[in-house]
Image (cartoon, helix red, strand yellow):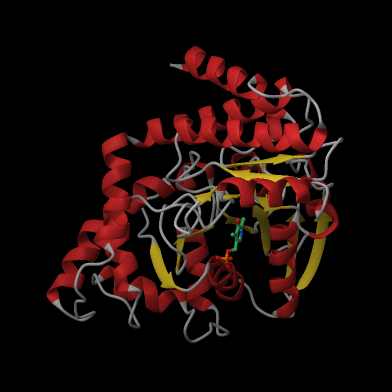
Length: 383
Ligand SMILES: *Cc1c(COP(=O)(O)O)cnc(C)c1O
């Protein structure tokens, strides 16, 4: 195995298509020049489609967490009461950012591996009439849960005057989202998950309702002031020197998505999830999430008869296959497979067949071919 043989199947960063890699190696351009202006003009409409919004999608050169922080700091003021729906490590991060900015945080914690029910919104709303914002994680990457953001947004708007703010990192680009129609007020994502780019960009879209609150906010930060990004982007520009190479790659990503068709992109992700889940069912290895709560972009596996950390080490050293472990209390209990972005059913079959070898070695159970065969059958049924 050469050092270049990497099979990156963690839930971010994810592999980069070679045409995107090439686009990012184009010569540098001036960020105030006509080339950047034209590039932004081409990118803007295509990004809106992925977010399901008529609003311009803002791009900030920073990791996804900066996008989450921007959403919090721009939309709230110290002392505001907010509700954070915590379904895993990333929900917890949202809560910590809110606490850091001296908000009054009401936490609703859900057992890791389960989705949050929209019914809880009404309960919290009746006990805390002044909630200013509700925060949720769309795909909880630490568990592989896809939370019902459409229903959550509906519940928030029917029972409160709060903004509904969603962390869409690892969801946007891999699963359908209709930000405007569903009533999401701020939707955030990052470049290195389903967006097929290296880390370094965070994307935010903001509803009319949220803009009215953000515009009046006197506590807006400097670098992460969303009004600056909005006003500059309206003029096909950015407030600061952006990650221009990432913008060049992004244009190619958007072209690839357009060529494949957004519906097909989402169907491919759904199929990859079904293939992965069927494979582990066939090998009699438990999954952390049930079918209805599961995300199309990441699957968490909770084996009973072998150590997931040992499996990760084994397949990494045998095949250069990178999988993620569990976070916090799930460390050593699960492993996670990313199947998002530049990933195909063929990649899933490869991952499963390599895992069968590792699992057979560790569990001493005869699993060779079992998961692969089931995944192949799912593929045939679907196509
Ligand atoms: C990866 C991820 C983040 C954090 O993004 P960074 O780019 O590491 O800051 C936030 N939320 C979710 C759901 C994620 O998957």
